[in-house]
Image 1: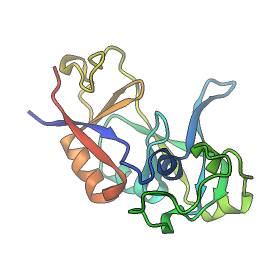
Image 2 (image 1 turned 90 degrees about the vertical axis):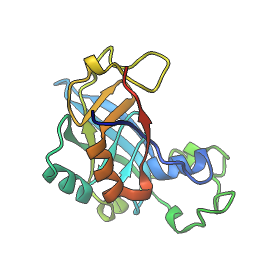
Image 3 (image 1 turned 135 degrees about the vertical axis):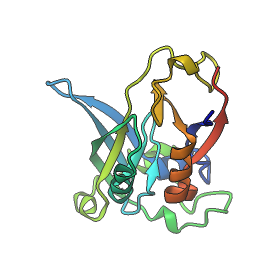
Image 4 (image 1 turned 180 degrees about the horizontal axis):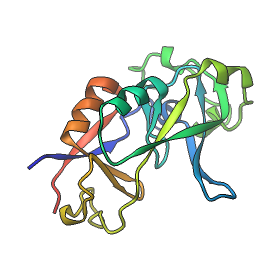
Length: 191
C-alpha cells in the first residue's frame, strides 16, 4: 500500500508575519459564467516556487510546467489573477532572526500587503502564477482529524476536501525534490 501525506504550509519565520510574506492573501472569484479563478495579493518580485495562501496551492510557472510534464493525476491548473503586488524583498532578511527586519506600520501581518499600494510595474517582474484545481471530495475527511477515508479517496495523486489536501508518496517525493524548503508534509494513515 502506498503512503499518503497531508500537504502543509511550511513553517514560516516570524510567525504570521512570515506566513503573509511567503504566501500572500488569496480568495476565489466566481464570475458571471461561474468559472472559478483565484485572486492573489502578495509581495514581490520574489515568489517561492510553491505557496499555500489560505485554501490554495499556488505554483510559479516554471514549477507548473515541470509538474505538468510529470503526469500526476487529480488536478488541473487555474491561472492566478495577481490583483495586488507590493514590493518587499523579505527573502533577503535573516530568516533565523526572531523578528522580521521590518514590521507593517499597523503591526498587523496582513498589512504588509493590504495597507500598501499596488505596484503595477512589479507584476511584470514576477513569475506567472497558477493554482492547483482539485475537485473537493465531500465526506473524504475524517471529521476532526487530518486523515481521510480510504474507501472515499478518488485514487488520484492528490485529493482534497475543503481546505485539506492529501497527496501520494510519489507526488510528495517529487515536490520535495522540486520545491524543497518551501513545502512541508505530514504522514497520514487513512481509515
